Length: 149
Image 1 (cartoon, rainbow, N blue to C red):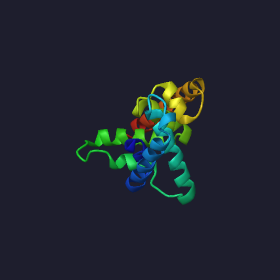
Image 2 (cartoon, rainbow, N blue to C red):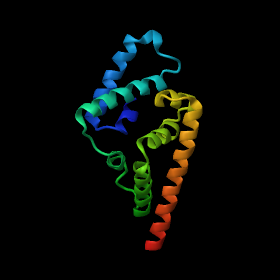
Image 3 (tube, rainbow, N blue to C red):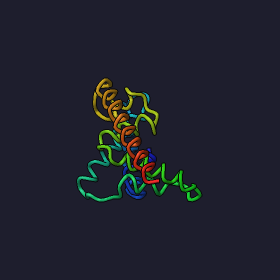
Image 4 (cartoon, helix red, strand yellow):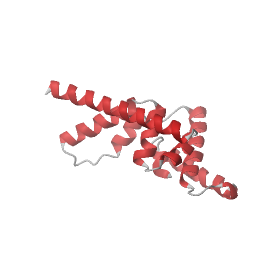
């Protein structure tokens, strides 16, 4: 849970959102489906949206993920990672979420669709298009980098 929210918020905000998620789950224990992870991520996502609407603050996804990069990376690995982070950050929020839910968290399309609040088929189309946009952005970045070298 915390790792999902950390991709979208600062450390303190992520901890606050995570700590708010579990009491909600406890109060609604009878309604929590199996497996619970997609439902819990959906609750955290809604709490985060509510908090963002009220405060409108936080770092960008790229900055947060860049902070997670190991300091001993060689220059090429750092450049590739930064290109991937930039490409991910350039996606719409909906596309980035689809890629993260499926690839980072390993949720099935049905589970990810529940988190995203859409039918599984819609999510599959969204994920396919998001992956294509991400791949196109990465290809363009590589071509630009090769031309500069």
